[in-house]
Each structure stands twice: as structure tokens, then as C-alpha cells.
Image (cartoon, rainbow, N blue to C red; front, top):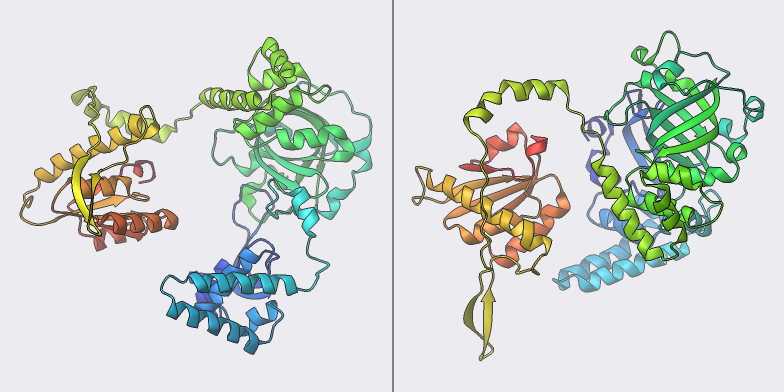
Length: 528
């Protein structure tokens, strides 16, 4: 935002509107400065946008509503929106004036919302055909859930398989590491084992993988990453299978032809290994095997479905990838119930997640050793949490002259054995008691309302609980999630609790603005 507003040349007042225009299918004209900052995807560059112009609307009425709403709030210029809607500016302004008049006469804005939906559908239906815009049938075909998602076009240099990659595979040695492979010369046939760190899918059933030696490192150096290409002309029917199986977190064994490309370049000298740019190396995969599946339930379910059909997946390879016995794989193959396979997928996902190796950085170990004496002098003790019965005070409330019983509950009663009753509610009660003890130790306790700052409070489950159980307090909740803050503010108004909500980061400037007597960070500890 700072860069856009300082270089926009009069567009700074439209920053919020243009930001909301970044929707799938929206055609924009942007100008800016290219920044070759380090990226997890070799060869990618970032564009610092200086100015932006709306050219065409997306082919979704819901997205058109968002753009019209932004224009109605003064966040987009009239001429651009009217041109994108293929309407005269005066005609569009007339429609939106009616909407504004409707909204002013109707506090609930129900009629205005209905008119906005109708206008968006009318504009959508009147949009002229655009040969460059993907057809709806192609969108649904390439979509995961039919939500108008379109795969990006494949780069020109990847459309046709090079002649050397189609030659008969040469004998290769035992699979090596990524670091050793990157020292080889190009035009070599190699075999490697690695973890999928990134996957990019393109039109034409072509997928680019980024392999690393250690998937547990959050950011592998560029000289330890290798780009690999799955092409249907090389793997034939197997390409579609492994395109879906090789998700982030999977371990694979691949053989292929290593070449140097000319399309991917970088300007960072730190990203080169002995004169060779790793971002320019590409492995055309000729054979691939899954060594370990990723822990995503949807991917495991796909693998189980393949096992249940003949000749779709080698059972021994699938069993090893899922860390199950061959007998269990046979049972999956013989099971024709898709619901049971879904439950099995969830179970295997949990097992694979539990087997993941946890990496502790040396800096963290050093810090833990530095403060070990605190652990020895203050040993942890088990606390027996007694779950209180839900508060249900029966009262008599008069409504329209009638009396009815009313139950005033502090928290939802929940079902016995549910997550709320077994985990969330006891957690709130325990935290509430600890915060109560801290407040009572404050010198101003009972003399004035004490201020509680809840960092990362989300929609305010803890804040609402404190507001209804502790007297004479004022609670301020901050979180970076705007949706959770909006829901929490509505709940505070409905429950009439002394809780305020704010979308903000827990920075030093925020702590200076809010005068807090007690600071709570129940779920934000890992980010502070």
C-alpha cells in the first residue's frame, strides 16, 4: 500500500477498491517495478504495483457484486467500472443511485441487497463473449469442485518433449541427493530421491515439482532445490495418477534427463552453485515411484481409490507409501465401500502426521538450555481440573404479558463427550480462574474497571467468558483475522458483554495505544 500510494499518481484513494478487484477472472492492466527477491519457486519474480486499471469483469455475478459495491463506496473510478460493465457511465450511475436510495430508506438493506444481486446478474448476462476468456465448460472440467478455477497455460518450451528425453533410458546408479545432482553436468540421466516441497499444475496435464532433500526445513536454500517436470507424453497414463499423488510432503523416487533451460533466470549471485544457476536446471521425469504419501486425507483417499481398482496402482508401492502391510493393502483393494475408504484415509493421515520428524533449531535448543534452571526451580505439577456444571439459572421473563422460563447460560451447554465439553470449556474455566487470580493481585482491583488486552483472541470465546464471569473489567480483543473480529463484535453486541474488538497486529505501537492492566495471549504464544 505504501508503494502504491506513493507512486499511483492520483490513484491512491482507489487502493482499497483495486485490492478487492484482484479476483479470479478479472482482467487488469498493471504497471510496476520487477523485484527478483528470493522465492521458494526458482525463477519467479515479484511485481511491485505502481498503478492499476480495471479492464474486464470476471464471469461470476458474485464477484461483479463485490466490484459494484466497491464503486458504490467510492473506491473505484466511474469511467473504468462503466467501461468494464459495457455500460454508459450515466446509466451505471443511475442504477447505483437507486441502490443508495433504497439503502437509506431500508435500515436492514434487504431490498438494496436484492437489487444489487439483480443488477450484477443483469450485467453478467449482458457481457459480450471474449475469446480469450476460458469457457465455463473448461472451467468446471479443470476445477476441483466446479468453482470456476482454471489451470494456467503451460509455458511454450514445455509443450513438446525434447528428443533426448524420449530416448531409451540409460542405466543409472543408486539414487543420489539433490545437492549432489546439482553438481552434475546437464544432458545426464540421473536417479534421485527427494521430498516434494512445491507443486505447480498447468494446462495439458503437465506438472512442475520442486524436490528437496529435507522437507522439514521451512525454506531450503535455492542451491538445494531441483525442478522436475511430469509430462503426459513421457509417462503416458501414469502422468495423471502421479500428478494427483505427488502433493507437497510426499517422498518420491524419480529418474529422468537433466537439462539446462534458458527460460528461468535469476539475478541473485547467492543462488548459484559453482557457476551453475540451479533455477535453470530441469529434470524431465521418465519414471517415478511414490516412496511415502503426503498426510493430506484427500490425497490418501485418492490413493485408496486407485488401490481398489485393478491395474491402477501397484499394491506393494501403495502399501510402502502409506506405511501399512501388504495384507492391509489387499483388504483395501477388496473393500468396495467408499465410505469405509474415507474413514481409512482419515486414520492413515493421522498416523502419517504422527510419524513426522520434528526439527528443533539450534537457536531454540540454546535458549532452552539457558533457561533450564527455571524449569528445575519451578517443576510442573499436574492440576486436576474439575469441570463445573453449566450455569442454568431459571428466571421468569415477561414477554408480551406471558411468562416463560429463561435459562441464563454463560457458555453453551454442549453434548457430553463433545470437544466443547471435554476440552474447550475446561480450558476457558481454567484460564478464567488464573486471570481472576492475577486481577485480584492488582493494587487497583475493585477500585476501578481493570483493562484486559486479549492478543490473538479471534472471535472472543475467552473474552466473552471473562466478560460474563468477572465483574468490573473492560476487555480489548485484537486479531489479524478480520472475519473473526467481525463475528466477535456481533456476539458482544448480542450478549451485551464489555468486550471491544479491533483488527490489528500485536506490535509495539499497539501496546502503546492500549493501556492494559493484564495481557492475555491464549493462542498467540507461538507468534509473539
